[in-house]
Amino acid sequence: MNSSATDFLPLNGTDHIELYVSNALQAAYFYQVAFGFEPYAYKGLSTGSKEYESYVVKQDKVTMVLTSPMKGGTAAGLHIDKHGDGVKAIALWVDDAEHSYKETIKRGAVSNFEPKTIEDEHGKVVLSSIKLYGDTIHVFVERKDYKGVFLPGYKAWNNNLKTEPVGFKYIDHMVANVDWGEMNTWVDFYKNVMGFNQLISFDDKDISTEYTALMSKVMSNGNGRIKFPINEPAEGKKRSQIEEYLMFYGGSGVQHIAIATDDIMHTVSTLQSRGIDFLTVPSSYYEVLQERVGRIDESISQLAELGILVDRDDEGYLLQIFTKPLQSRPTMFFEIIQRKGAKSFGKGNFKALFEAIEREQAIRGTL
Ligand code: FE2
Image (cartoon, rainbow, N blue to C red; front, side, top):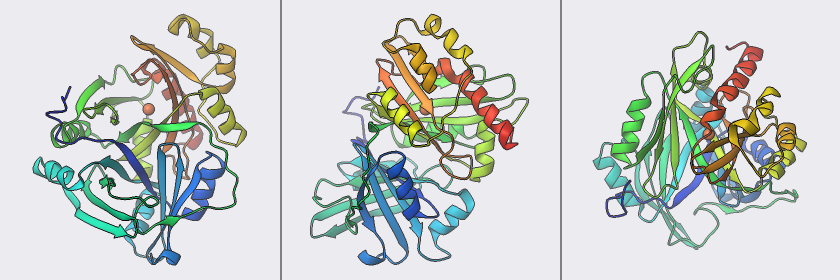
C-alpha cells in the first residue's frame, strides 16, 4: 500500500461525475424522480453559458452533472453521437489541482486541459484534466477556496419537484470497460501515472459462463476511497457483455457506477416502485444462498423478492444489485451496494450475474 509519504496524488474522494446526455433537462428529471437526486446547480443560457446547458443533481456525496449541447457541432454533441449518453468526466476532489496535474503529466498522463482558475463572487476553484480510456477524462477539482454552489459559472438550482432520496451515500466504485488487450495498459496507467495499487485480479476462469468470459483488475488509490475495476473482454463461445458494451458505446468507457447505501432493502424497493428495472437471477440462486454465505441479518425471502444478491469474503458480506442500462444504448448502468464488512466486489455472484446479462443480451439479439 502507498503510505501517505509516497502518495504523490492524494485524493479526497469523487467530486462529481459528468455525463454528456442528449437532453439534460429530461435526464435531470429522470434522475430526480426515479433515483431521488435533489436539484443542486445549473448553468445555461441564463447564466451566460451559450454552448452547453448543465443540470447538477445531488444525493448525499453523489453529485452528477448532466450536460447537453445547445447547438450543433460541439465536442459534447460529437461525443453523444458516437457514444450515446454516457460518462464523460470522473472528477476527483483534490487539495491541489496544479500539483495533481504536474505529478500525473510527469509520469506520462496525456493532458486534456492545463490547470485553470475559475472564479466568481464566492471564491475560486482550480481545475485541471488528463485523458483516460476512450474519450473519458479525469478532472482534478480543487475547491478549498470556494464557498458557492458547485462551481463558478453555476447558479443554485431548485425546482418544485418533491424528490425523495433513496438512501444513496457515496460512490463505492466505478467500472471501466476497455477494448481487447487494453486492460493492462490502463492498470499500468493507474499504477504508474496515478500511484494506485492493484487490489484484485480476476481472470477469464474466475469470470465466465458457458458462453462468455471477461477479465478484470481492481485499482485503488492510496487511502482506498477511490476504486476503479477495469474490465476487458475474453474469448468465449458468444459475444460477452463487454463486447456488447464496446460495440454500442463505440469503444472504451464507464460501464457502471456503484453507489453505496446503508439500507439496500429500502433503496431497492423504492427504486422498483418508481419503475427502475433490475437484473434478476433464477430462484435457484436463493435456494443455495444460506449454504453459500452463512448467517446474514436479512431475510432470504425478502432478498429473493427484491432480487438482491449476496456475497461473503474473509471480512464480512455484501449485498448488491444491478439496474438494467439507464439510457437507450445497452451501456452504462448503476450498481447498488451495501457493505457489511466485505471489501470485495461480489466474485461469488459473477456467474449468476453474467448469466442474467446474457439473458438480456439474448432478448436484445446481441449475444
Ligand atoms: Fe461493481
